Image 1 (cartoon, rainbow, N blue to C red):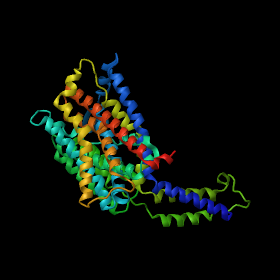
Image 2: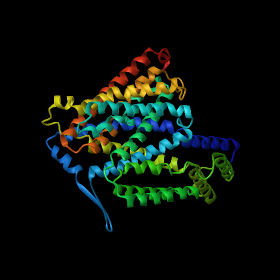
Image 3: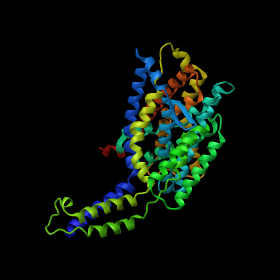
Length: 458
């Protein structure tokens, strides 16, 4: 093989490694921003379907009962509950993988960098929850305090994507990091405060399976299938335990290995050795892959080398993220966002204590909590502002933090069973999220328009 071709191939190899290992954040933003369009479309379809002449079919379809039977073990759930308990567990599994990656090599790896989004997430959960409690303290609807605590990462990143390169990259990373930390907090709140009854022998089985995951890590097992099978088993038994099964997704994700069979240096050495095996009599090898078995074997070896250097964590994240972004979340919105508006007293829906607690929690509690706690963390020298990010940027992103759509709908379904109250919560979630999105986008538009640096950005 000619030297210039070998160097060209090595450049391609380095590009491949960079794409698989050093650019996950860019792909993450693209997927989340794109999925927000599908999420919005699914929401509109659900609303139109639920309020059309065949609106009764919406609820009948999503409440069709489906059962899983394994011997004496039987689990029966409606279709919407299978989506909420199964599909959303997959969503939280990918969230857990993102969190683990960020803790190891991302924005959460350095203590001071990590404390900034973590402090923002804590404030963004605590203040909205307290505002809701202030409106509903002592009432039978106090269980809905968790509804305004979480940020919808897809819609929030979709909103910030409108500004292109006019906003600093550090701001986008901050938004993703605090929204991920926010989601993790919401998962544990669901597990602790929204679990009604625990079946302990299923919990014991789950603990034994977690021990198996731990042993698999110790034995340096890197076959993804092992972790998939054990993860599904843990989810299945948590489903019967009474604890909400979404917690299984996060717990299992922390046991997925974050190291491949060998490091990048050894990968490059292997590739260099394999590239030398490409020898052609003429200047061009052409389609020798069809004729030369040695070349075919070398290509297979290169493929295995690429597979072995990528960690199970990255492989699962790369595989699952598109499915979650473009299927799981839109299906969740389609099955949960539909509500009949017929016969609803909108004045009562907007001004009852439940709705007021949700709207004020999302619209005011989120930005106040995010800005206040992150500011205190910086003032106490426990955290630092991301590079090129100003407090005006943080305020704008904090407003976008009030977009609580997906997780708010999810927790409202766990909090209430009365159709009227559920309708009120959905109206309040839509209202609070839409106003938060408009306010955040408008604020960021103003500060980017006033920034002289952006006059040169195309």
